Amino acid sequence: NVYLDIFETMYRIGTIIFGGGQVVLPMLQDEVVPSWMTKDQFLQGLGLAQSMPGPLFNFSAYLGAVYQGVPGALVAFLGLFGPGVILIFAVVPFWARLRHLTGFKAALKGLNSTAIGLVGAACVILWEAAIEDAADAMVFCMALTMAVVFSVPAP
Image (cartoon, rainbow, N blue to C red; front, side, top):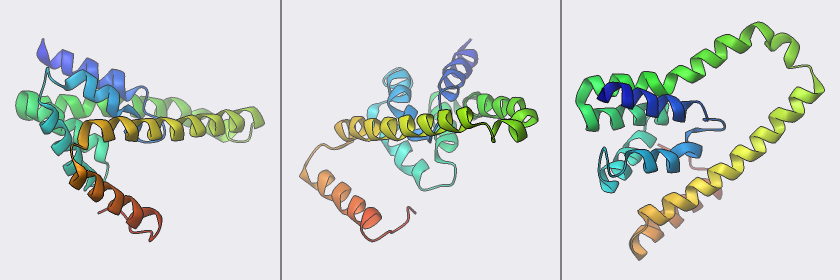
């Protein structure tokens, strides 16, 4: 069943999101290009989704819609969103106690550091996939400079 395949792919990817959706973009690209869509469709959808709140969840709906229309969008969104919702409901009863444990705090700091490294790696992988000429590189460098030096927020 194609919808079960979409759900399984998105659910599996949703289980490893920590520190932001950029962490799983290379894995998402490997899963959906070229079987669901072209590389250009993937990168265009990523650019569009980045301009909206909750970009990865919107992007998952885009991926599902390109592949299987509106039903595919709904299944992809639910698949990616599901693991986080389950985790929240599983942790909430224990959160008041866990957040004060020194070992738990240290583990979260380590996970955050790992997520920062994974975001950096994802940027390098996306750079290799998206930058095709000098004009693309100039736009990237200007956007990076505006964000880092001048603190211009993303749209």
